Image (cartoon, helix red, strand yellow):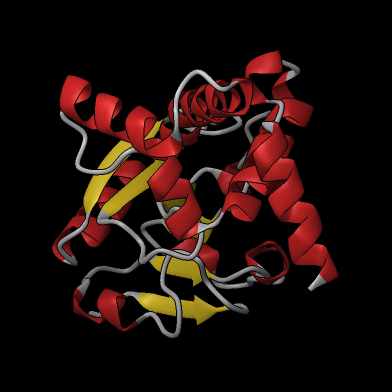
Length: 214
């Protein structure tokens, strides 16, 4: 039996269409798209599904299911395929569960995404999940050092590539994928977490302003 795919607006995890999910099997429901919140709220046939996976943006899963256990949400998980700005989505899917989510539902969702050739990391329901929580302060620090004149963008990128073994330096990566998107994500995390590490660097703020004026 194929997974039931509910398309609710443009999806960052599966842009264009959700054809990658067509090979997944099981009795789960995947709600993909920017309007996943509304689609989930109106979903009426979740009881028979092994899991319901709701695509997340910067919001937490708790905004969809609440903080306290309720049986109607026990099989619901959140997911987000990691994607930097306008770049193609990576193969990494961050699968979000609540402390009271049925473990069988989490396992079923993991199996469905892995059947599509994706790599799944399971995490708790925290702002930024795993990747953004770790890399946004790193990106902001690199941008601030550039603003301070520590080194040129090329030299900063070269040093970090050779020193850390990264395939691409942070400045080039952000300029390629979108400084304005980095601003959006960092701003959301700063609002949620309050840490100065997530305050968008000046270059990201300028890029966002210029994007709005275009």
